[in-house]
Image 1: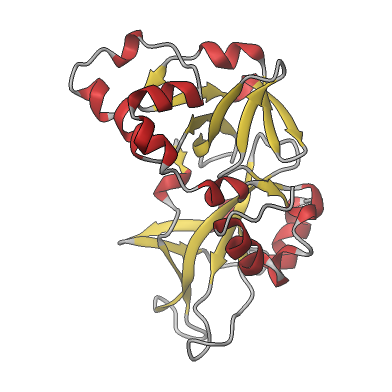
Image 2 (image 1 turned 180 degrees about the horizontal axis):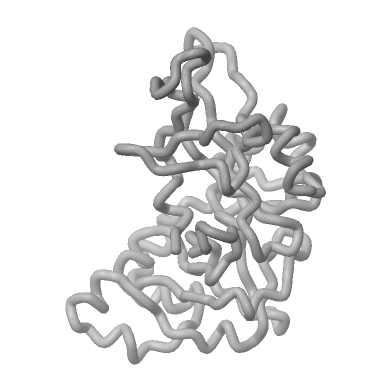
Length: 242
């Protein structure tokens, strides 16, 4: 099993043309893309550095099965259908319906808000998701941990929200410094954002609300590649268009 956090912000390399065994940096992973049903990782968006520090370049989409680990990062495996349009066609993706779960708010079908998606675990051999981590992404989460929600509790995507079954609200918190220190986190039932607030109200208020607007369906990003940085900046400034 592999987690999204093991890839996020890590460098990605590609083989130099005509030079077997030699690699050059492509960029770094900054977002995972999920299939329209939200239950499998479709691939990753790799952010390339600006040209001369000024001209922005489009992200590169790398298929989920086209990244292999190397020291300190990842490399794109050899092949002609590993990136961008060729990879999307090979995977049969309905691109506009693909989803970026990271940063998306999550709630149950009964309307109970649980926090937002901070990570996911998936099978690197199939791309299928095992579970999601729902937390606040800040100090409160580091104290009490996050809610680990099995993919079976995923209902789907709706208007900027990850929708989960009511049972997701009964999941126990996992991880966090308090738990590791023997503070009894295993006894605490998940109450979403309220649990995070109880762990530290100030910390909860300090959470970057902008980051929570990043999770979305690709069809709502005006073409994705041409506008992702604009959407990212708007989200970081707290201007959500959902």
